[in-house]
Image (cartoon, rainbow, N blue to C red; front, side):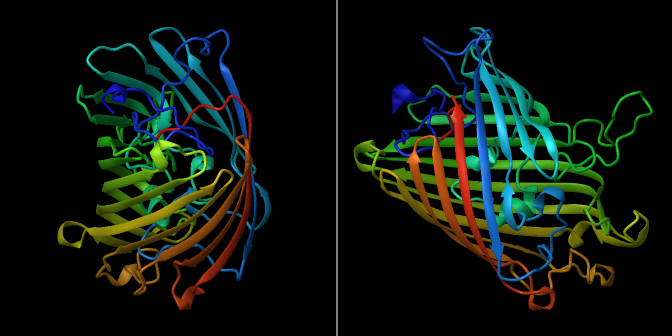
Length: 424
C-alpha cells in the first residue's frame, strides 16, 4: 500500500478494473508516456439511455424536505438520459484540465464540469479551480453513469438535490503516511436560482452589470477527510467524514409554493469496502458501501401562492430548527467476467415542524419515513458497453398522496473514445 499513497486513482468503472486504493478524489489522468497534451487531448462520449415503467402515476415528493429542480424522478417510457462529451488531459507538467458537457433532452446542453487541477505542487498539496463535483461523501464526485444504479440514493436526492456541484476552489493535502490520509476544503459560489443547492443565492442581481448572487459569491463551504488502505491480499477500504455549510436566500421549490432563507448544514459519514481474490477483479469482486447523513436547516420558510407571493411564515429558528437524517446501504457483486448483481436501500427522516402553516406543505412529514429499495442486474458485452435492469420499490409517499410505487428500468451505457478513469 505504501507505494500507492498519493497516486491518483485510475480505476475504471468496468469489469476487470483495479481494486486497490489510490487517491479517492477526482483523478489527474494521463500522466506518463503517451499521455494527452494541450495539443492532443483525450476525447470521449458517453451515451446513456433508458426505459422506465411505473405501477401507477403519483407526484414526486419526499415529505419533510423542500426539494429542488433536479430531484424529480426519471421520465417514464423510452428516454435519452443525461449523456456527456468530455475533453481532458495534461496541459503541461504543472496543470491538468477537464471539461464535461452534459446533454439532457429536458434541459439542453450544460457545462457539468470545467476545471483545472495542479500536478506539481510540493508537500502533497493539490489545487482545483472551476466548476466541479464536490469531493464530499463518497458518491458525490461520480458522474451519473458511473453509479451502480440508474438513480442516486434517496438521501442524496433529499439533502443535495442529487449532487453538490458548483463554481469554486478546492484545496487538498495528501499526508506523507503509509496509509492514504487526505484532508480538503472547498469554497463555492452558492449559485443563482437553483444552482448550488442547498445554498442558492436567489434571483441574481444585475445592478453591477453582471450576475451577483445574494450570498455574495460564497454560499457554500465544505471540509472533508478520507482515510484508506489495503486489507490483506484482496481487500481495501475507504472511510470518509464530510461537512457542508450553506446559506440560502429565497430558495424556492420548483412549484413556487415554498421558499427558504437561512443556513443549512450537512454531515456525511462514508464507508466503502472492496474485495476480490488476490486483488484480481476480472471475474469476482464484492463492493459494500454505506453513507449516513445528518443536518439542520435554521432560518425562515415562507409558504407561497405559486406566484412567489408569501402567504405565511414558518419559523425554523433555535429549538424549532429542522433536524434531518438519512442513510443508504448497498452491495454489488461481480460474479462473472460480464455479470453483476446488486441491492440498495435508502431512507430519510425529519422532525415534524410544530407550526400550523407547515401542514400540507413539503415540510409536513405526514407521519412517514420515506424509503426506496432497489435491486439490479448488469451485463457487460465489453468494457465499452453495459446493460442494466433495475427494479425499485418507491415508498416516499404516504397513502394519502398515492402510496408505494413500483419502478422498472432498462438502461444502456455506451462509451465512445478514451474515457477518463474514475475514482476508487
